[in-house]
Amino acid sequence: MKKIESVALIGLGAMGAFFVPGLSETLGSSFRVIAGGERKERLRKNGVTINGKKYDLNVVDPEDKTEPADLVIIAVKNYDLDKALSDIRNQVGKDTLIMSVLNGVDSEEHVIKAYGKEHVIYSLMRISIAMDNGVANFDPSRGKVYFGDRRNDLSALSDNVLSVKELMERCNIGYCIKEDMERDIWFKFMSNVGENLTCALLRVPFRYLNEDPDARYLCMKGMREVVAIAEAKGIDLHEEDALTQEGLLPTLPPENKPSTLQDLDRGKATEVETFAGTVVRLGKELGIPTPVNDVFLHGIRVIERRGMENK
Image (tube, rainbow, N blue to C red; front, side, top):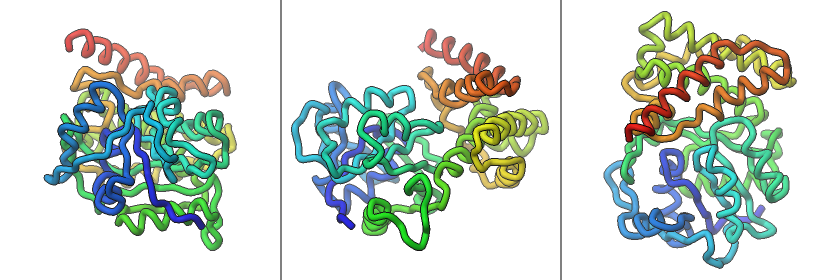
């Protein structure tokens, strides 16, 4: 097992912010943040503030020639993935591991296409973080990064997975390793489609999923469309999983807003294509009706365009 001594992060939004305290405090300047242009200058000047503590960062330009990082974490929005894969090229060597914590179900496929499957660590994030103007606040105890190979023998993890596990423990970053990462990625995708998009379309925080039966109806119908597609693709996701997630709705922070609604409120582009767009596309390919996700997709597109026009 190789010990990870250097980490490069691209995408210092809500998900990227989760890693900063542990990596910065443990690795020092061997923790790099990849950014270019005005964003690079802003991060170099201001750093980021997380849970009330300011972190000065080692910011490297995508064009900077450095020693390859042992691990690259990609935490951009899904629509920026192709650019991120290009921007990390100077950080990737023959032994570099790449962990993409993006939403959706296909970012690992893009990483494999760009750099090869031997580099890939499958991963996802479960945490609710609000970040604005370089300031993030969240409860670290309520968040984790899930990672591993596509399939994992928990009694005999691969060297790559053991390397990341050791890093997370050294940096006191919450983590979990599951036997079937593909299933877990699809489970989170199902949850995001139902919860994230219902709140975004209705412009309401999470508590409405518990308090309003019509909001709950849309949420569950959206999730069940994902289940139908997953089952058709041979993914281990079923009706019981949708019911399990329904039971977890009361645990969501009631006044928090999911990422898509946060983006709409700020007049920014959303990941609706990653969520509903993927469901609708796969539904057409597989002959599975997706009426609720059709409404999510077209309704949120309208709200998104209006917000960006008025920004």
